[in-house]
Length: 321
Ligand SMILES: [Zn+2]
Image (cartoon, rainbow, N blue to C red; front, side, top):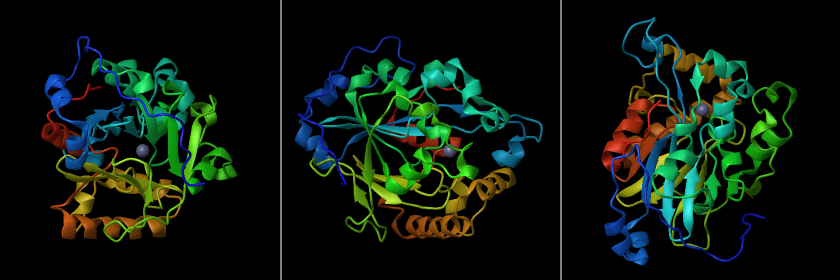
């Protein structure tokens, strides 16, 4: 079953933002804009950092600074306004992770991951004037803990994910048991499985997440980092965005010839569920960026440079930390 519809549509209720850490948006203007026009022009997208990690070795991680300086990695998530509620692309860390960092395991402790309540998607959306119930759908690039931590904060949302990723996470092979601790889905999320087979998207397979709406959000399988890893394509107001999740880690990897700080290169190699597929999909992304860079903006989960670029372009600033 590629899509499970869940009842009547409802609109987002905007509430006044209380002491928002964001640059003020202009809800009055956007509310005056007819929904159909906004959808025809594309959807409004917020770029959020839902969790930073600051391990030592900045030069090896970010490609600048000193060896002993702390590096910086972000969890770049998207919040998309549609005519039928918000769609969240990945959730970063959640409130429970901020309360108890130990639940994320030793790998994230070694990464000096810093989940904080104020940088969760929930708290950032509340600061923008939304409520948890406004998030009707979450689309997960994959289910590693730094991408799925906020699932319990939105218990009523559908969670859209590739079938292969869901199977890998819910019934992990022995070697994947540490990768997929079950703390983020103990509450029983409303999973919606997807299998590719939809329209071709710039030469990639796709699965449409919202088939009943004008809003265009597509899962684009990019297998390799994990067994069911995918990108998420979103038709935004000024063109397509492709959230590539962990298909690459540094913007230099999209250039020809590609470059990547050594610690990130090693990290990706060690974590890959299928190294050959990962390298091949990264090559396809380079080709996409080179041939269609004027139509598609690519971004990944953990590159602070890309997050800053997209926040500047969208005119918003996420909470830092
Ligand atoms: Zn990640």
